[in-house]
Image (cartoon, rainbow, N blue to C red; front, top):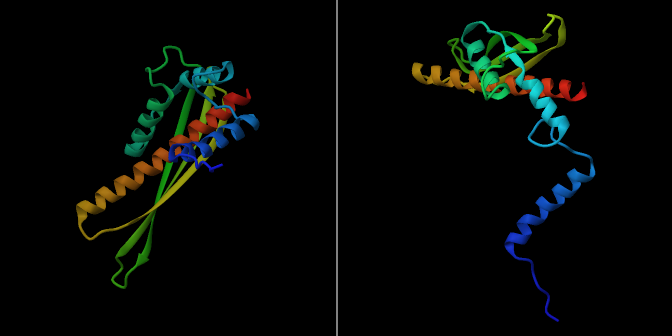
Length: 173
């Protein structure tokens, strides 16, 4: 009897099927999503957060990112929580030449956040930190674009971290 080899499509689907079975067996469930009463409750809690104004341009970028992710259908009419964030940014010069010019820099962003209940009491607080290294090109415009890209990536990572921590908090509550 001739041995039949699996098709290329079957070989690609086999690891995905194994992963799905493994995740199902370990009790994995999404933290927030479209199914299950717990995940819907977490999503509703996240949508009831008002994001307070954050200082500076970096704060505006982070706030807009959080608004897009937390309240995609618009700001809540009666928010149950207020999220306050303070940002601190540090740029460190790395790889310095003899003439005191930097070839590489590192951007470090620290975010301190507090989630306040409707009564003004702190429900959750913490810090999030992200850093990105980037080359510093010779052209001034390229330097501005590179710094802006690094800043946006750092702020996106901080935003995702804060959202994940909020989701874990509400999932435990």
